[in-house]
Length: 436
Image 1 (cartoon, rainbow, N blue to C red):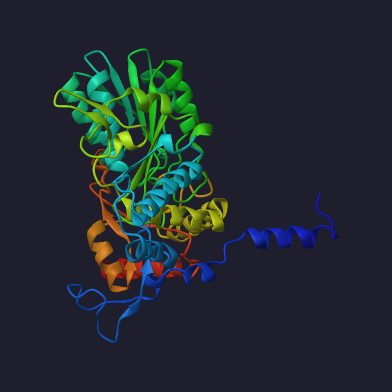
Image 2 (image 1 turned 90 degrees about the vertical axis):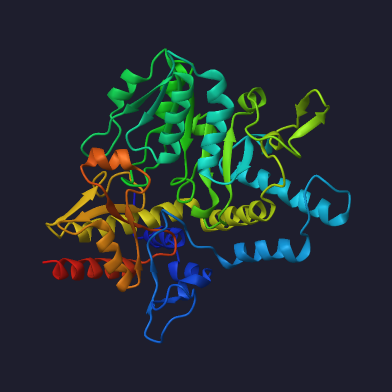
């Protein structure tokens, strides 16, 4: 119960839990960019350029100075291959690279480095399991259950594996608000289901799917569940053990880390049983002219020279995000998305996709302006130095279900402000007048 005596403490706690956005923005040098002019000459432009408003975080987030420094430090101070040498630099690199696995495993609640495989991105992580497990285990009569909101990384991968194995792909429908139809999920996930592959957070609808409930359904029928966490891990607390998933993937470049690295969580007991996806150096234990045996986890799935600098930098990004607080980040970007939706709902010629404002959804807003193609709208936004995404967002089947070929998407992150949302809305209003 609030009293006059406890109110100051409550208010102080609330202030402590809020995000100091202006302080956060100081960590990101690119946010000082002025954009405009000749894009063929990056970093250069005329004097009349405009401050960047970056609202394309669902595609790629920006990188804080300390993560950039972590990459630079690796190349300046201990650039060497891992697990290959006894010299000092190789040992330093190996320790840092292995520690990065420990850090990312801890970040998502995995049991240890044995359950954390570094890949190029979420897409490669999906393909790793599809090829290593799917080609071996799937066959005629088996089902793989996806959703209508899947990213192509999941949909196309399982579609092609199913064609090779004779398995069937089924899709859980979405309702009018862009949520999963859980009654339909219960109908589809049955005794023939071998894998349920579902996006944790939709990159178009912003829908936060009930992964733990879907995991229960999958496990009731002795099937595995793979969650695509590319749009979840960057902006909310994720614990793979609490979710009870068998596999979980995410990408570094969406969570303040470098491009070219992603993570695959897999249950140790499953990863021990399945075959590697790629073959070559470092993933082997013993090789003869006749046969080979595999290295211990996770190196069994990391053939060749791995993503050393990227892994070290991604661990630094995880430290950075956790120091700020994942709950704070989630609350901040959700508030921005709610604010943007509130503003856009004032226009009667804008259609917004996904669950209603105020409900459990992520910090992105996909929409269309009547009679204006999403690409044209994004081009006009660029004239105002507002960076948004336009197109099908690697979800062509979902857009077909929504009845549109493309949509515009503004996606927010920890360094965005309400003032930037206002700039977005003003630019959209200018587009409306231009095409009126």
